[in-house]
Amino acid sequence: MAPNAPSPVASHAPKLASIEAARAIAALAVVLMHATHLMRVPQFSGHVALGGLFDFGYVGVDFFFVLSGFIITFVHHAELGRGAARWPGYLWKRFVRVFPIYWMVLAMTAGPSILSRLLTGRTPVSELGSDDIPGTLLLWIGGNLPEYVGVAWSLQYEVLFYLSFCVLLWHLRGGLALYGLWAVLVTAQSLGALPGELPWHLGDPHCLQFLMGVTTGLLARRVTLPLIRRQGLWVGAAFVAAVLYERLGPQGAHAFGGRIALGLASALVLATLVAMERRRAVRVPAVLAQLGAVSYSLYLAHCLLINIVLALLAKAGVYRALPEVATFAIAVVLAVAGGWLIGRCLELPVVAWLRRRTAPRAVPVPATTA
Image (cartoon, rainbow, N blue to C red; front, top):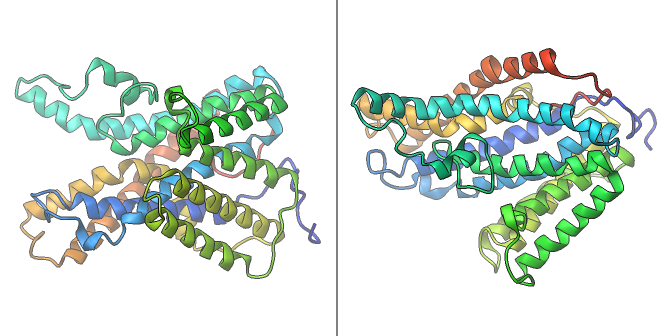
């Protein structure tokens, strides 16, 4: 262990600003990709803007899945294996973190459509059938994809992951054994070695990415992670290589091999950032750290905000008068600003208020934002 470095198993740990910044960069990648694609509808540009320059932006979601496993393991490490008594407090924290702001953005997105239908005497929620309610309102992965908030499909996986984590809280060794079996089954299904598919998307490669994050979180809390000279540069290059392999590799985009490459590269990024933070606090631009703290709001609301900006530009008659890159930049900047405001004015205050009012007494955990 480096001199004066905090113990990796200490009950308290400094807030990892570098990981907040990485979270912000991942969210921005998704925003950039969606901004170019939202401009392709006929009433706007009619094609993907900027020649699809940011089509790789979906890798931010792959990073989020690894980060999810890392964060909950890192934050709840002291509670692992403490029994089912830990479930209520843990599940409440996860509920407060995910659902209130999701329901707010869902209302913002669906509200105008519902109101318009009511005012014109039509069925208020024609898009939402009974089969859509579990997936849309409760983010249940066993049902249909969520309506209205398109990016909420990833939240269905997050809810699945958070529920699965209860096994580690209940019994650490047993939970790790089940997680190991899970990883084997995901690999087997991806390679066609299972007769069918696992239920609830348990065989999706995104599940392996979450498990990689859990593994990284355990290592970060239990051992001193290695750090070599210029490791940050090498890891950055490895992540870029993983993105290129996922996009251009022999299996094609969104294939098992690419997902694994992205998961491993993301885990390596997180491990490196933790190792760097253990030795000396990593300086990151304050704006990135602040944006990382509200990246969930930005992720949820950016498509709605981009569409609003583009529609206003079109209605004002300046959309086609501006260069495409200028329209794109305006939409992205205003969407990011709007997401930041939603996070600062709605998400963070609501989460803090709910946790103060109802959170049970718990073992102290690191201050890293979960």
